[in-house]
Length: 116
Image (cartoon, rainbow, N blue to C red; front, side):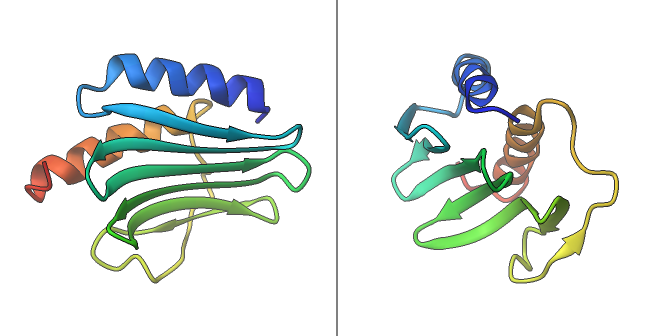
């Protein structure tokens, strides 16, 4: 994924998902970091490095990742809600719009666990 594609997807997510309050971005030529605020201390963290192709998506509560999906060394894995310390391989990868897919999953977690 390219930074430009992810920036476009962030804009779409901000407009589509009712619980995303704001997005804060940090960008260089090769790295994009984003924080999609849900409420105080609850947010989606996004990290993409074009050069290493490392891609991280995490739901953060306080200072703790409570759910996530990462691509490292070309392989996707998840950090399941309720057991986010573990790595579960995702041989199927993710959809062509990984942030939208992730935020859809986050919405379900937020509602099912009364986080918002």
